[in-house]
Length: 333
Image (cartoon, rainbow, N blue to C red; front, top):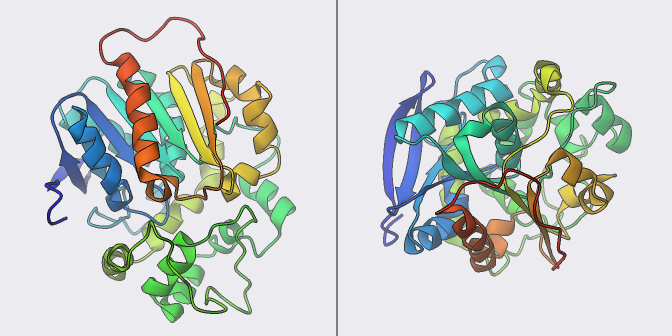
């Protein structure tokens, strides 16, 4: 972006060309976005991390923005996406990096830490908690049982269906609806109403018309299929990760979520986070931070605060080795 001093380039990773935005010198911090986002959702953190002496690297993930979008939904499994990130880390000339994830990016970062903990110095994950694999129930079956057929993830499953509905209302409207969704209620898209808003959508103070136009411009070119394909692999990922049933995430972790985030209000999540159950699955969980009054797109809504949380956590690991046993405790802000 003009005036930000952020550099952009394309790198070859795992058989695709990946667009990367980066700035700064120092330890690498890999910023992994979710849906329906881009590298751009980390624009504030890129600047803050660079100013704090880090090299911030934010890719457009497979299927997003200026990165290649393979046509087959079968090429969007957790193995493919984690493979892209591992190849990117290698391309950056790094053995290990700090990692920060949000939404689907957080899910992918949990997988990265399960599959290749040797590549991660420490992890800050936003919005989506670790979800231990439940061998008796597939994820889509569970979501459908809880929320019904109109739940957005269930609606995403039929190839082409949601892409057509989004095309009918236009990319700009889609982004206004998604980014301004600020409620813990589950997101549902009724088939008879589609994704059209009931009235004018007023942008919050943290989201500008320029931001909306940037997202709109990129998605008008790339479309939504790549990002939606992540959701279409939920059950496939469940099948592929059977060998990791019961496995722990054994890297230092800080988890941050807004108390108005819909993902924080999925049945069982609150209890899992605060009862100590998550600590059993993520033994090096240092801290859980719950920001009051904050929705899903937390790194944009509370940009400065999130940047401080990230930098304060990562600096603990800049000069010394990762601890060998469980440390830290949860705190509620």
